[in-house]
Image (cartoon, rainbow, N blue to C red):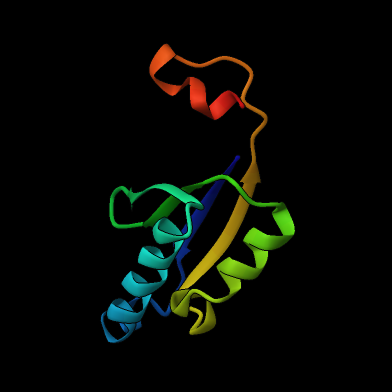
Length: 95
């Protein structure tokens, strides 16, 4: 499992120009069963993606396809997590 931090760079002002493409990239991640959750980093610092069902290499390729990454609007950092314990509602994450 992975957490992807998408932190705004000095190019943040360009985000609105590429928002539709970024949203399509997010939708594709959900449609393909890789993304579990996306959200904003507060306050206005960027975004975060919770991802699974892929290797680190596959996720790195996927992240490089994000228009925000391509355009330098965000800097991406991928953190790999090895879940050990979860609330019963999240047990599927331990598999």
